[in-house]
Length: 313
Image (cartoon, rainbow, N blue to C red; front, side, top):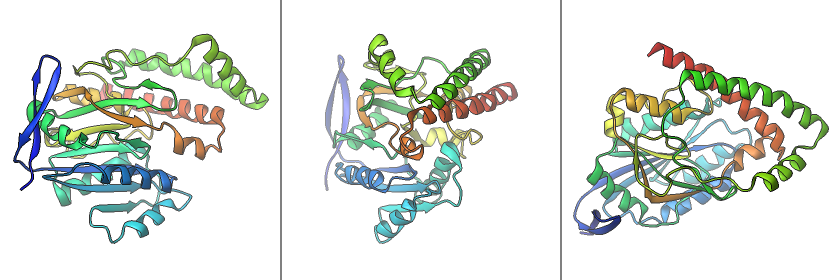
């Protein structure tokens, strides 16, 4: 029988030791419009050390118009480790992931469910071993690792200490509306790339998220990759709040965690790479201005949904 790992903390360093124990993990991968990107991610996952861990990959195709979901289904139809679910319509981030979460719970009932974009790479091939032993040590309900954007070259998590309030959401909507008016003008005269370049030269590179290098509890975790345990799913059997299409899912998740007094932890000892925006920029035919306009419009729709949710609860 092969040995698993567990960890103990000494000062600020973790010592990984050996233990005989079994764990189960399901990885829900939301797919849209990039066959090779999802294949590359699954190849990366297959290189993980899965000793003493039972696992399953659940790919949810959000009605990709390029037919890549069907290609993935055909490619993996004889692979017992991969489930591919093809949706008839694009239901967005939360509902799409919830379909994968439900499949994981109903059929496999794993101890941990990783909710992940398909534009992710895990460089550390002992990641899953470390994840399971940290779960045994901390007994978290939700966990987020360090997420490093390879395109913008900064650490993206945690996003902030506390989810946005109703007042902050209303101010964000007003700010976005003003910016949308300006961006639509810029898009018409085709100067977005030039202005972005000048802005980067003046303001410099993106700033790392505050406290990305230390463990924190109760912060807003970046949504490209996070982990739900059975504790979270007992409190919220349906998974994520389903009413947003895109954006602010992280803030709503933070609100739900705190509402039920669950344990949410950011752990920089675990790290993933994020090839941010690969699928979405292809959707907008490499027009970054149109992509930004779409993001702001969807953010404002999500602001309205979150405001209503906060008022109701």
